[in-house]
Image 1: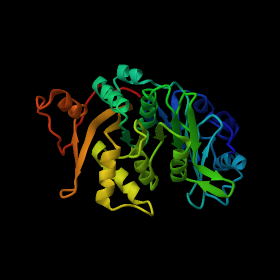
Image 2: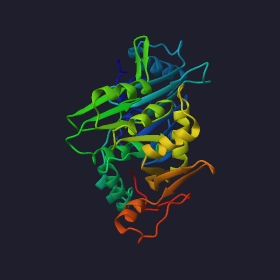
Image 3: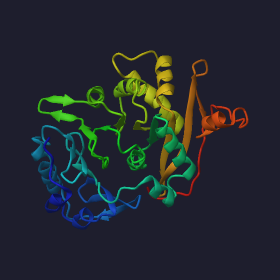
Image 4: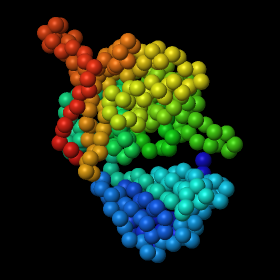
Length: 345
């Protein structure tokens, strides 16, 4: 698949943004129109003066990004592209937007291990141990959070907990994960010529490649149904992420995505599939520039009569198994929030 040029190649077309494009501390550049630029640095948004960035320059930049992909912004006003350096660019041009809007999300910098996240205060030690135990027992983890909350950072760290001698198949909308494994297949959705290859296509196809573990970068739609089928048929120790406001709503979102499949099962059956397929939910949040695991819960069941997920704090079920009836911990229907020291993830 063709890729647009890297971030460095955009500098001639975005006057006034040269330093931003070369600054490794800048994670996102948001251009709302001529001279209207905002930057995310260290998790915080700030305006950036760019008086020389005119409408004509923005049109040229859009064309420069789209041309290697065989696209024309005039005929396709909404465009998502991945640059050669891994950065992502979203473009919206008239008539879909009053002015050319360009958002550049940079990827680079260092990859954080789980231990790094613990040291930084982003991942509580007890939650790491719960995640390690979950994957070791070949159960599956769902990571949830909002945009830019650190889902991919946490997912990368969790992948490192998987056994080195087992096979991983990773499926992404855009290749963002950093997986340093010899026995790993990377699949990317997108348009191949006139054919569109979806995440759902790739989840189904992945099963033909003998995965020990399946990693889906993000679940958004009907592919959730196929993923749940895979998680419940011998691919334990798998991982995925989903957009959600909290850990509990992540379970409902996953079930709702599965219901988008044309051959979806009834809601109650789907929810039972979520319970069987997901053992642990980790919810990440971003506040005041800090990213951290805000909530974690074990998935114990689904009460169809009340429409409630039955959950417990991480490790509760393991403690009951180890202690017999001694721990006294019972599943609950409330959320379990952790308030660790906040740190960048």
